[in-house]
Image (tube, rainbow over all chains, first blue to last red; front, side, top):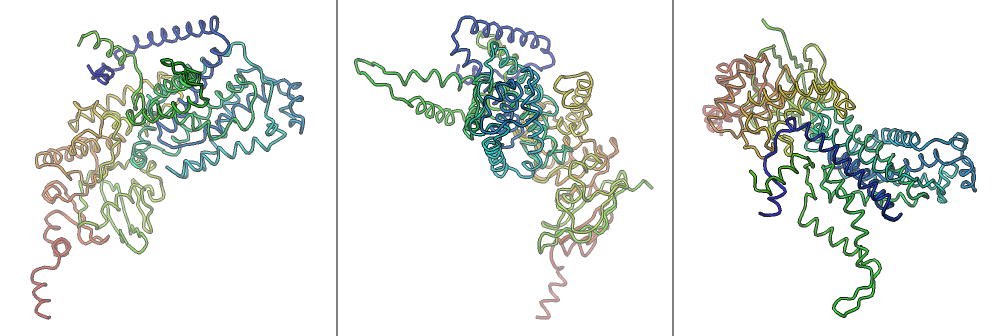
Length: 364
Length: 266
C-alpha cells in the first residue's frame, strides 16, 4: 500500500456519531501530553524544558496566525506587531516597580506603568486584550485592501510597531529593551496550557458556522457577501482573535527569554511563522501545530550536521551555518513534493486516525 | 392582485462612457415568475449586480418590500430577502456541498461566536436546525447523495443546482437566477424548469431569471422583460414579447424587408 493510501483511509463516519468517544480520546491525549511534560520537567535538563516551551509558544503563534492567513485567506504579515505588543505589555505589568526603575536609566517610565505590579495570569489576559484592541484599530485600515496590498499594509504596520518600540523611550525603554523579566518555574505548564487552550478555541472556531463563513470568504469573497455574510466584520473577528492569542503567547515568550528588545520583533519572526503555516498546510490548525513542533525541534536536531564528523576515515570539520543550508533544502523539497503542506486543508481527527489504523490491520 | 414586492424606477448604471443600464423600470409582484432576456451585453447581469449591491447605481431607485435598496451593502440586501446565483458559477470550491449550503444559513445565525466556540445549547440547537434544513434543500435540488463531495468536483449542471440551494439557504423572498440553465443538457433543463416552478408554487418565492435558452424562458416565465443596450425594449407575456418587432430586430438584426428596402435605396 502506498504512503498516500495509508493516510487517506476513504470516507469517515459522521462526526456526531463518535462525539462522545472522540471527547474521551481527547481527554486521554491531553493526559498523555501532561505525562510527557511531567517527564520533561523531572528528567530533562533546562535546555529541553526551554525548547519544549518555545515549541508551545510557536504552536500558539502559528495556529492563530493560520486563522487569518489559512482559514480566512487574508495574507497578513502583522504577527510580529502582535507578539511585540503582548510581550511588552505583559513584561511592563509583571516587573516590580523596583526592577523597572533599575531598567529605565535614560528616561523614567511613565506614571501608571511605573507603579503597577500584577500577577502573570492577569497580565497575560490584559496583554491579550490590549493586543486585540490594537488589532481591532488596525483592522479598519487593513481590511480596506485585499491580497498583495493587504500584505504590504500589514508589513508596514508591523514595522511601525517595532519603530515605536524603539523610540517610545519612556514606555518601552527604547533599544535597551526590558531586562530581568522573571523566568517562571512552571513555564512548561503555562506555555502548554495556553497551547492546549488556544488549539481548542481555534479548532472549535474553524469547525463552527463562523469558521465556515471565514472559509467562504477565503474561497470567494464576493459570493460570501452575496450569501449575507458581513465580510468586513468576519475578517475583523479572525484578526482580533489572532491578535488576542498572539499577544498572550508574546507575553509568555518574554517570560521565557527574560530579555526583550525591539530587535527581537522584526519581520523575521513573521517570516518564521509563515514558513510554519505553509509547511503545515494553509488552513489546517492541527497542521500548523505539527509544523510548529517539527520546525522548532527540527532546527535543533539539525545541529548534528554542524559538528565535526568522521565518515569512513574522512574527517569533516564542523561548518557553522550548515544546518540552515540543509533546512532550506528540506523546505524546498517540502514545497516541491507537498505543495499543500503536511495536512493540506484537512484537520486531524480521531475518526481519521482510527480509520487509518484499522485499515492497516486489514479491516475494511 | 398580489402585493408589490420589487419596484425599480429609472435605474441607470454607467461605466465610464458606457451606459450598461439605462433608465430601467421593472415591477415584480409577490409570486411572479419573471424573465429578463436580451442579446449578449444587453446589461442583464448588471441589473442583477445593481439589485444586489455589487455595483453602485448612477441613478434611479429600487425598493424591495417598501424599503430602499440602493446604497445598502450586498450582505444587507441579502438579509432583506434577495437571494441570487451567479452566471459564472461562484461556489466555494474547496468546501463540501453541504458546507456550501450551510454558509448560506450563516448570515441569519443568531448565536454569538463565543457560544459557537463553547458549543452552548443555543448554538447547538441552531446548528441542528440548519443542518436539517440544509439536507432538505439538497434533497429539493437532488444533490443529497453528494453532500460530502467538494463543490468544485461536481458536474457543471450540478454546480448550478448547488448555487440555487445555497441561495435558498439565505431564505430569500425574491430569487434572482442568472442563467440557471447554461451548460445543462435538455433533460437537466426540463427538470430545472420543474424545480423553479416548485420554488414558486410550493415555497412561495418570487423568481426573476436571466436565460438565453428561449424555449426554457418562454415555457416557464409568465412575464418577460427584454433589454437591449441597457434599455427596456419590450415587456409582457411570452406571446406578446415573441411577436414584438423591436425584439426581433434586437435578436436578428434588421428585418428582411427593411434590409431589402435599404438595399433598394443604395
